[in-house]
Amino acid sequence: MATHAILHSGYHHPTLRAWNSENITITPNNLVYPIFVVDDPDAVQQIKSMPGQSRYGVNRLKEEIGRA
Image (cartoon, rainbow, N blue to C red):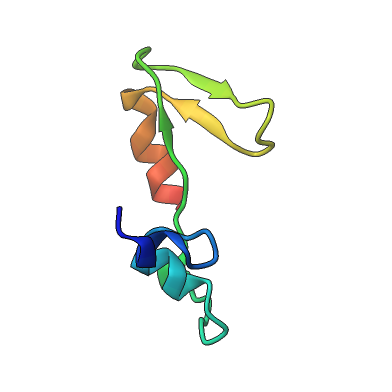
């Protein structure tokens, strides 16, 4: 990796460096909604370390994505 990429605030990717600038405005377009998928098609598993988040089986994804 080139030195100029490593020695900039610890952010190695140009996009991460741009997000770290003072000129960034956070809008809904910048945000990512996490969806976790599991092998069991009908599962809904709470993630204890992430309150309010769950893992979903493929048969449950449609209802969860609809809420987002």
